[in-house]
Figure (cartoon, one colour):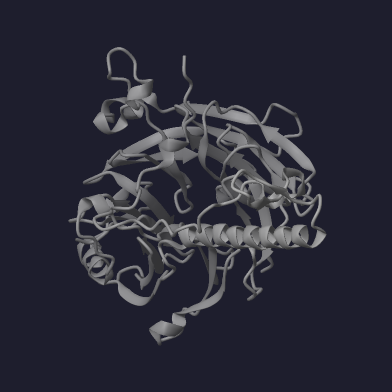
Amino acid sequence: MKHPFQHILLDKTGDYFFAAAINSVFLFKISTGSAEAKLLASWTDEVDPYYTIRKHHKELLEQYEKQQREKKEAEDAAKAEEEPATVVNENNKRVIPEEQIPASTKQVMNKKPKLPLPGPGAPPTYTYIRDMCLSRDNQYLIVTTDNDKAVVIFKINYSETEPSKVFELVKRQPISKLIIADKFGDVYSIFLKDTEVIDDSKLVPILGHVSMLTCVQNAIDENGKEVVMTADRDEHIRISYFPKSYVIKKILFGHKEFISSFILPEWCNGKVLVSAGGDSFIATWLWQSAEEGKELKCKFEVDDLVKDKLNDKHLVPEKFQDDSGNLVEYCISKLVALNKTKQIAVIFERISSVFIFDLSEDGELSFNKEYKVSSDIITITAAKDQLICSLDDMSQCLEIFDINEDKSLTVSKNASKLIESINNANDSVIGDIDELIPLFNTNYMRKRRLH
């Protein structure tokens, strides 16, 4: 059975489509009007799925061997000094006094650490693609991986006819600089075109939050200065100057739950920020406003759009349920700008509809229309004349819409053939539905409060 695409991405021209299934990335050419998608290249992350376990085991092994060496050196030193460096225990054996044992050996490992690999019958462990994005000039593909927590950067040779040369690996690990962030709230800056592999332990944060980061975006403020926008699980959007990111320009307050997605639509000339996540509303901000605390333009409530679509998939975990056992919750998983029609496409986690909103240049948001698809939407992408949804459906992995001048969406006339050719090229196969990687994990960022 084919694994669904957990991430999809269109380039700015809309002619090139990137899709990630488990630990593989595929690049297709799907020019407007094409009857089929042409597979240009693919790349599979072949890092050992037990990389993290092996790395931790290696660290423990090195610690054990260091302790053994220090213990032996201490014993040798005690023998040389004779008295009173050692004492004799009840078994008439020489022992080292506590105060003479090196600090690193106080908690000595009595046994050599074993490698804790899963045994027979354990479910498979995958190394999978966490996220993908393109550089501003469309020339570089940046991929983040799960198991070894790496940032992998490719130079894309679109004109190359040899599949193995389309993806040119620039570096594995963490134009000019790439801004990356980790789950601990730290943000780093690395040179995009530097081919040297960077050890993350040598990176120095340019700024930090005290909560898990969820979104990072560069922008230009009203004075022409570059800033970096960061959002976190603690409901904040921070705007810091770049590269001197220790200087905070402002913090946007208004959300009450985590922020999962924010965008700067290009038709608003960078003046409007749209954000959403675990709240029951979509927020728009005039973030360049000189009046502190006056940046929030509007909050569009979305409860009425989704309340009749919530089901057992949206039940609150049992530990946090109410007495009725029917308490449900939802979250917005992604916002995407439709530049052609000056609209915003919104998807909710585990809901099989795309919701389209009109957004004015001054930040006013209004609901336009809902478009239903055959199954829950994992993620979406849009560029130029197309919007593509990745679906949690083994029989139909995608839905492809044309974006029309009248602000409507219609299923592409070549959708079935395009989807079939893309699905046929997907060689990420699983044996059972239990082998699916996590496809819906946005709502897990919600903070739980015990009463």
